[in-house]
Image 1 (cartoon, one colour):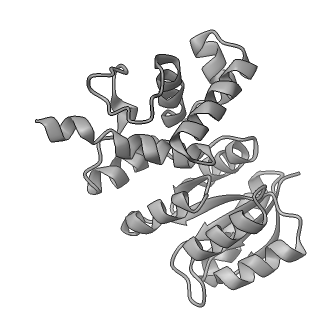
Image 2 (tube, rainbow, N blue to C red):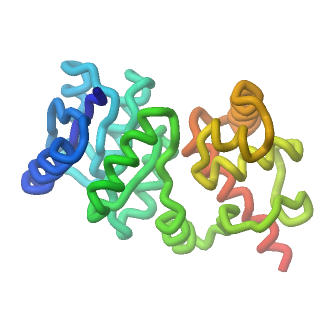
Length: 224
């Protein structure tokens, strides 16, 4: 059973999320917190798998809490609960190590699917939300590139063609198994490619790799 915690300063939302998640899944909400400090205390007390983390909270915000949690408990996965108004903070939280983000008003079924995806090693960066987020920041999102082309996409990290293809698959939210089937590679080979990508990009997880990929694709726009 997946053990999760909800960190949200609005009591009504905390309670409703707990009721809904537990009623439609086997995910156990073992605790709730109303700020980042309480979230850290909860991580010390409970053996958590997932933390659903709000961003703007009193005492300690979600970005600070995420950074501290990932530093002390790197195996705990953090999913940011966000609104479209929190764009910059979302990026900060992803850079702090969060595995993904999702809108607070999302369909509960999708939230449960997202929790399970992250639990099993995936990253949760909804493409439509990513488009909105990075569009606001005038970033060129490579998710929508039809093909990887060294002439049109910045590649300052010396990624080879296969690594670029794997990176594109990561931005599309594909699992290791999906990537292996799409590229006709073994899962082990895919893992090796991903490990190399992390090393070359100097990142620690999928979300950070996706963010860097999106940022570095700015180069082509500057030429025109």
